[in-house]
Image (cartoon, rainbow, N blue to C red; front, side, top):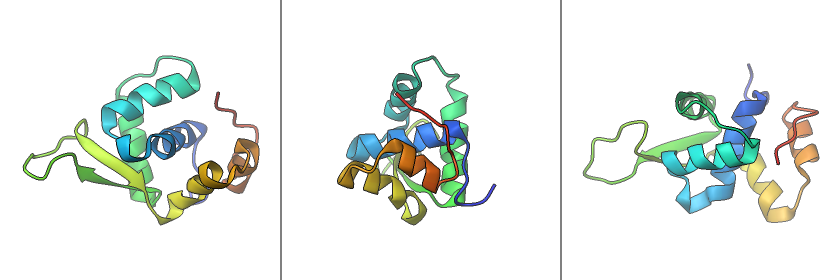
Length: 111
């Protein structure tokens, strides 16, 4: 999988990070992904997706507090350079269809 091709589920997780912005903590992201997809998801699936998206350069993460040893459940996420394409969707009103087409995800729909 290249930087510009991600799975539909990863796209949903990336949308959740973009929508939540400064509130993009792990637990909030899991709840937003569930809402976006309209179905329950296994708790580990979004966490695995967040780790994958970070490795691919779409997002970056930070401990939720400076003095804590942060687990995967206690992190803040934000869009990184490769994820900034999602920011244009929210800042400039680009349709999700056009957004996903730019990522090679034609036919992906998130409610």
